[in-house]
Length: 442
Image (cartoon, rainbow, N blue to C red; front, side, top):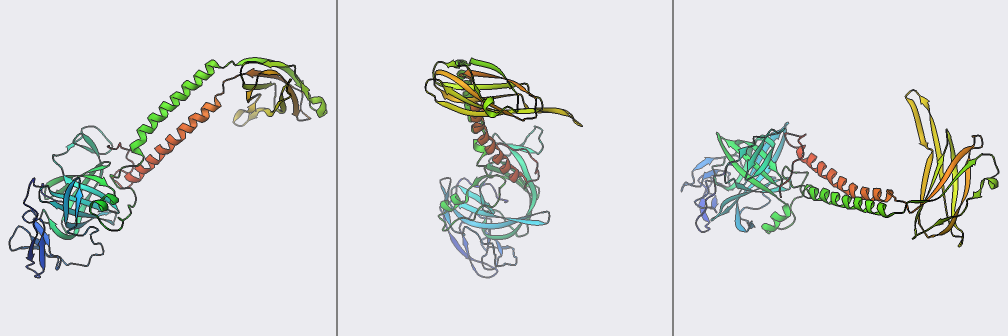
C-alpha cells in the first residue's frame, strides 16, 4: 500500500457519476474529493480522480480476472464500530525462489474517518491502518532485527519486493499497475507492522489479524469465507496465549501435590511388625517348600502393608508366592514377586541386571492378628538362596504421587509442544526459519 495519511474529517457521503475519457464508460466516485485515482471497470484505465476531466494516468490491458474481489466494491460493513464502504481492490505479488505469492488489498472509506484497509492471503485477513507515529529500531542485540511501536517489540519476519498487477475502484494515491515497492514486515502476533518504501519514501502501517468469519459478519456477506491455509505470519497461536497460565497452574498443582505427599508421609506409622530370615534349597517337593510364619499384629486404622524381600542372589532368581492371612477371619491377600540378580563382565566392562531386593504393597488391610504363608520357587540347579522377609505397617507410597505428577506434566508438555510446532510452521515461511519463538501480545 502507498496511502496518504487519512483525513480526520470529510464531507457527507456522496457518490458521483462521471464518464471515462478513454471508453466513455460510467465512472462512480464513492470517495468524492478524497480519492486520488480511480479505475474504469470497462477498459481498465487508471484515471486522476482529482481532475474534473478524469485525466488518464495509465492504461493497461484489462483481463477477465479469475481472482475477483471476495468483497464486492460498494459493500458496506462495520469495522471497530465505524461504518466503512469498500471502494477499491488491488492484487499484489511477491516472488520468492521463483514462486509467486499473491495477496489482496481492499480499500475502505468513511467520510469522517478516512481510509482503512483489509488484506487477505489464503484465507488469512488483517485489519490495516496507517501508523500514528514512526516505529523505532530496537537497540538490543537479536538474531533478527526488531522495531518498537507503541511500547511493543516487533520481530522482523520478511522483506520482499511487491508488484501491483491488478487494480479496481478508487485509491487514495495514484496507483499504477506494475508499480513496485519494497515491503518489510515485523510481527508481534496478532499484530503486524509493515513498512513500504517507494521512491525513497517509507509508509508504515499497523495490522491486526482478523478471522475470516468476523470479516464475513462485519460486511454481512453470504456463504462462508475461504478456509485459512497454513499458519500466517501474525496469526495468533491458539496455544501460546495460555501457555504461561498452563505452566503456572502446573507449578501450583505440583507444589500442592508435594505438600500433600510430605503431609501424608509425616503422619504415616511406617512401623516394622514382622521380620524373619529363611533359606531355600531348590529341588525340594513343592509341599515341603511352603510354610507359614509366626503371627504378628497389624494395629491402628486400616492402612497399607508392605512386604519386602531381601536376598543374597548372585546370577540367580527366586519367585515367592505370598498370602497375608487374618488369623481370626481367614481373609487372605494373595500376591507374588520374582527377585532376580545377574552380573558379569564383557567388552564394555562390568554390568548388572535386576535387584536382590523387591517390595510389594497391599492396600487397605484392616487391623488384627496375621501371618504369612510363603511358597518359594527357584531353578533346581541353582545353589541355596538365603532371604529375609519384613512386614511394615502404614508405609508412605510415592508411586501415587509420581503418577499424579505425570498426569499434571503430560498435558503441559503436550500444549507446549503444540505451541512450538505452531511457531515452527509460522517461522518456516519467514526470512528467519530458525528464529526463536516469540511472545504474543494480548
